[in-house]
Image (cartoon, rainbow, N blue to C red; front, side):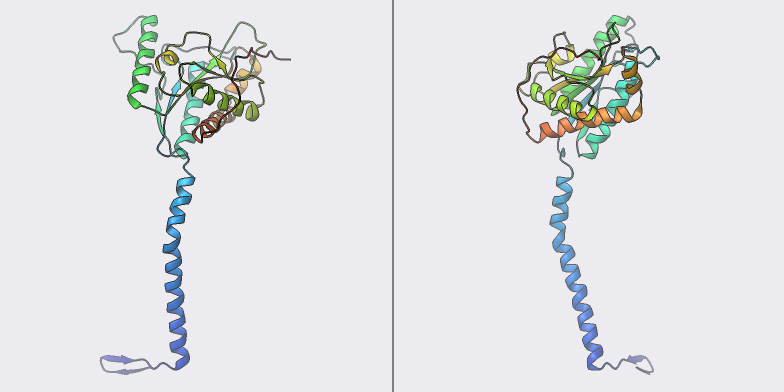
Amino acid sequence: MRRYRNRIVVWLNYKGALRIAIGAFIIIAAAALIVGDLPSTRTMSTWSLPLSGKTVAIDAGHGGIDGGAVSKQGDIEKDLNLAIAFYLRDYLQQAGAIVIMTREGDYDLAGKDTKATARRKTEDLVKRVELIKQAKPDIVISVHMNSIPSPKWFGAQTFYYPSNTNNGQIAALIQDEIRSKLENTSRIASVIKNEVYLMKQITDVPLALVEVGFLSNPDEARRLSDGNYQRSIAAAIYQGILRFSAGEKIGTVTPAAPVPAP
């Protein structure tokens, strides 16, 4: 290389020019491969968001003045329901779903001027139904816990109302995941026998109510208050939703009686 005043002259031999040409070719080829790979990258991203475009409404049972069931250890159903609902929300959002929560804290949806407890509970349920209907979700999941006088009963069970042909399927798939993942019950999904306002009012969207366990059973109550167990419950519900969204079907759904502890 020689410098001539304001100019720089570079002398290249044949081998040097060849090396530069090869290097340029490699850079161009690499760029072409990267650009050509972009569609497959986008495809992979799409496959990793299986619930993209879906809206799921999660109803964490009770809240505010209505605490629901209480365990002997003092755990309150409304708090545990919300904790599980948050874990479920996170799983669903990671899969690309839009998630609507009927509540995200310890409150109900009744108006401030509504004082009587019974009236607040009724107004809260009406407002929850209105919120869900306005959101026009693809799936609705309601999270609750069980409690009865006898402490021997335990295990989760998913219920559905036979107003929608898909209710039984999503309930059965969630219950199947609960049975295999939590291994604490032999129950199958069942038609609910009690009058549940939310389930009776929402008939055009697949809806399942998951009673995730018995707070009246001391051992199960301790598990239900554990964050890791709550996450496992949410994961089982989430997997059931995934299977339903993928169009999977499961066998005949029939009512089942509770199974007592051994």
